[in-house]
Length: 564
Image (tube, rainbow, N blue to C red; front, top):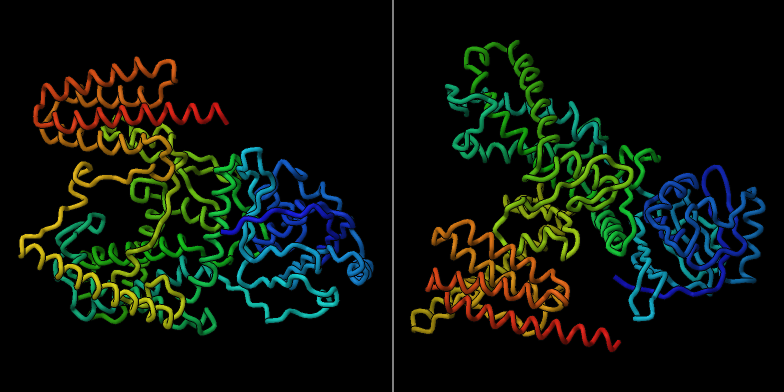
């Protein structure tokens, strides 16, 4: 991520779309850069720029795009203005038809991926962030002659499109159902159903896992006529990096104090817009769930007598398809790993916003639930729930897509990229094996290393602050978490644990005038813990010394702030 300081020179701005031209003879630099940043959303018209504007505007510029000093002109006037631009040199043309941005010789280079700070305060902190992340199919021609604007693109315009009707609809359901019935016809399923198709059967799922992988792979990798000879897998790629960067830019904007605003869903191309990374990950999970549940149905409903009758097979495919459709619809609406339903996460991916605990998203009705539950006994969870470290944003990394060792499910778009990644993993695995052999050899020689993850006490933390932990609250929370874990193992009364958590929270959240009182209350609960559980005395004593260090850090930080 690169930060840029903006030049103050006014810019001549021209915006071209299919139906109109807009010309701004003197647009301030902040507004000009913001217009370029809005191109990150791949707008197709001026009206779409207006719709996307709330995701990028700052207090330093017009609240609405329609408030910018741009006027409608005919194309001849626009091109005459472009021809005359070189006299001023500070110009920018945003071509929504050819999907490109061209800038004059004196305009600051912006790069395809950049973050701009509109404001720098007296302390040097940057605010009012605007992120620019052009889609892969957009061209950026910087510091060029104005004649370039009237020339065609340097490369053919190819925009990846996702046919979600095929990926999620009857095409997917019928394909999977047909393949599953064919496998059932080969006699590869248990003969008698032992469980309801609505109830999980882990043993059946495990036994049929290789067939699940095969059906999933065949669905993704088989060319289809309704996709013009392409495979469903091709539709999953083309824009992951771009989409993820735009989402990250919206997170930065939110953390700087701006509202979270979803991209509109009524723009041209929304229905078949390319997939983001999280939608692809959830699509993998959806396919696996549909296939897995389909086996339960087959176990109960598919009988040898029916399979012997050729006219029964289409009926079985139809019946299984109806069941799989219900599984798909139910899964999309059920909580995913205890959080929001997949349908909400997919919508966030498609509308390019991150989903964070309890964050309201303008333009969307759904909201990510708060992750941490009440009455949790973990000091770290309590600290996070208090909002002390900001909003927790959930991110799906999709590591499980690589577990089968199959290119079909990989997050790599090309086979060559996947092969290269496999080679890197193999090399890393060999290095880890060598390291492990070395450790085992040292253990055999009596030189066993201490397990650095065994305990917060047996693994000394860095002397400096942890990221986002200026004074050391998080360090204290790690230590107290281990003490509470030991208390839980010793079946300590819930009241004792609760008192520790409450007094700790009151202590680290206390104002300077109340800190000494809060510290004494917390120390008394620590003393009571040590008296009742002598085996914890060493940890409690060391923890209290770290509280003293925390006090010195707080005092030093406050004094430093007052001097500054």
